[in-house]
Length: 425
Ligand code: AMP
Ligand code: GLY
Image (cartoon, rainbow, N blue to C red; front, top):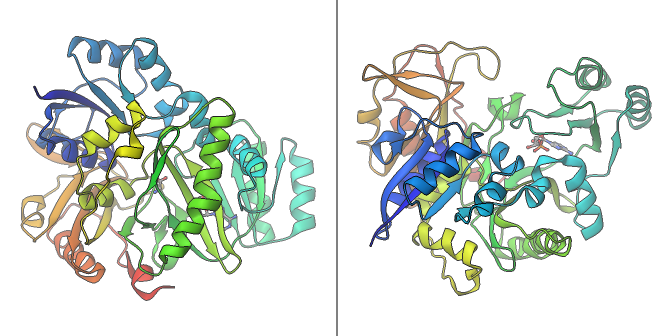
């Protein structure tokens, strides 16, 4: 008998996961809590917020949900998995203890030091005066990160001393990100950034194809940090040997160290890496799927994702044969003009049907909602337009062709998604 599943989240990442789960012959009904204006095409939206753990667990019990999949970092960091497990519910994602590899920069930096994982040289500060003295001693460029989850906006890459001093004032004195005023100050790393995803059952892990996000709002990686503006995958210039090296030097030591500490990670380990002239260096660890990385992975995965999530929970990943389509995928985020600062909401969106007529294109939703049957914008990142192709160039061209069919007032997207991956620099 088909089994019913629940996906938790609001992003295109969760839309893509729900879309892929829906294709499984073993899955019956897909629920998504709370979902967004577009998720209704593959799932039933459930009006419960991602942090309402007790209500979500009650819902899973009432609907006899056989698998719950958690997308975003904040419920994982706050222990949603522990709450579900305490009630005997099957849930895919790391426990609160394992999720600290993402939720606390200080924890993850210490783990890297313990496991000998290559990363930027760093120091942790809680006093503004000491942090300022350290920054003045090291000089720019330098990177300042707050300790806590601030949706990809917690890193200040400071190219000048003035920027560094402003970042320290904002984070430690003015507390603009509402985090405790603890900061990690680290060496600036130069190179290309890539995303690695390794799915894990706590003992065994499987590394996914490489992907490349585009984190800043402006083209050529300029401007403010965002939650991600577009992804290309796989990245051809990362060789098989380099990927094996990353697995041996980053993925396995991190998972082994977590297991040794008594908190094995069941779910996803997603290290963000800088490929420097001296080799790969970890920028950060995440304990979930990346967004928009999940969109390309769900498009390229050949295997049944329901089986994959269950193999993690059952500890049988070693027997799982994870297969991928031998294709490429690109996804482009369409944002509301003004993002990542202020932007308007409630703007009518048109053209999605036409966009999905472009071959191999699917539009996943981010900040959208339905108001009396009309789709309108409801967030900074609005849509994630994904395409596959037999080459990366073809996937990118299809995605942009589809983006061209979509319209809302003041829409914005980067025009260089995948350009770095194609040129290899
Ligand atoms: P994080 O929140 O640690 O992922 O950092 C966000 C982004 O800031 C990364 O994706 C990089 O683009 C950039 N970044 C972080 N750390 C460094 C570093 N040490 N050197 C250069 N860029 C960095
Ligand atoms: N791809 C950026 C993130 O998910 O944090």
